[in-house]
Amino acid sequence: MRLVADHAVVRVPATSANLGPGFDAFGLALALHDTIVVDAVAGGTSVHVEGEGAGEVPDGEDHLVVRAIRAGLDHVGASQVGLSLRCTNAIPHGRGLGSSAAATVAGLVAARSLVSEPEGLDDDTVLRLATEFEGHPDNAAAALLGSATIAWGGTEDPRAVRLDVVEGLVATALVPQERLSTTRARATLPHRVPHAEAAATAGRAGLLVLALSQRPDLLLEATEDWLHQRYRAPVMPASVALVERLRDLGHAAVVSGAGPTVLVLHTGEGGAAVAEAAGPGWTAHQLAVDTDGVVLTR
Image (tube, rainbow, N blue to C red; front, side, top):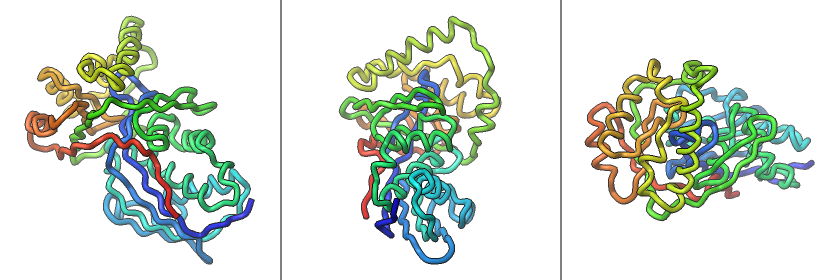
């Protein structure tokens, strides 16, 4: 496999996973983006970051986008080269909005654009490689395909389908200052849950498909969860308390991914009311659903 290009520009969306009952399966792409400019160069690797993560993330081979590009080139047997990256990041880090999945998907798609046979890194392959990085396919699927997605198969054979959402669906992300690692959030989860709670959550996950695609009036009921959110309260008490308060007011609020961001699904211009109900300490972003997923331009 040869390298046939030395430049790529990739735009990738933020994502929210789980959406309440769809634990490790459901994802939603949001209109908040990172843009990565990749140049293949002679010599070493350098990374310049503006926006989120500037001055914090690695600026060489350990940068996640670089690691993903390397994995993509290795997968198709292409030669490795020096890389110059310019990253303009808007996705908050460590907040449950899919920043790591965005970086991974962006790197893999950048690698696709550099090689002579891009079909070697088709969407199924990118999803599999991204899931190896992430440990689960939910955020990566939404970042890759856009709109809402349902993923299954775990790390062994991840698969995903795209679900077109109802017109006018909006997400308000309430982002706190504090961060929380996915590893720490997942460590709070029990090894077993009561059968009745699992059954109830499965029913709501099925209802969520209808609510997202046709019946937004059912979003409050469809986003009810018993599997993971309340178990995470010890490491994000303010987020879980806010979810409960907003739901008591009739808003379809969930913990976004591993948290601590709180996501509210609604239609119309309800973001102002949600932000007012949240109160101080939360930065509100009213976001459209991103229907494109990762986008590549040379």
